[in-house]
Amino acid sequence: MQLSNEGSNPIPQGKYLPASRFGNIIYTAGMTPRKNGVLLQSGKVVATESVSTYYPAVKQAVANALTAAVNTLTEGEQLTQILSLTVYVNAEEAFQSHSSLANAASEYLYEQLGEAGIGSRAAIGVSSLPGNAPVEIQLVAGVSL
Image 1 (tube, rainbow, N blue to C red):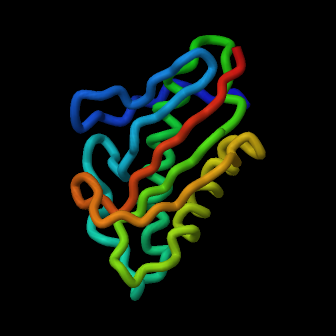
Image 2 (image 1 turned 90 degrees about the vertical axis):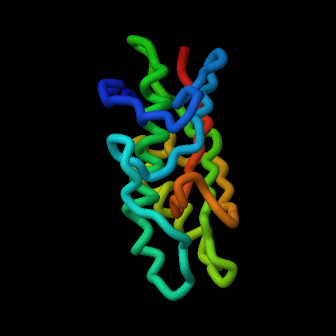
């Protein structure tokens, strides 16, 4: 799947690269739901809210990760497979629907890449995330050489 790498990289919040590459493997940094450096949503994911409340944040975070990955490609290369998707959820203790949030990220990747957007996945609850973001997403992707 050929994607444009004309989008601007997410703005790092420290001294790191949005994505790094070794051979035909790309590793993204953990991406929070920031647009132009501004966090779109913050706070813990709570069990009393519909999980759909958090879908815009999930989609922004995964879009940031995909953009960072695509921006490592050179002319003629293409991202051929998402190998791994990790979704960190800043969840209150009672929240149990981590996989539903990860599904929103998987759906976005499927919309963008088709079957190549679906790889292995982990959804992990954590007690906090940078900037009090509700989610953070990290990708590992394969590139055709």
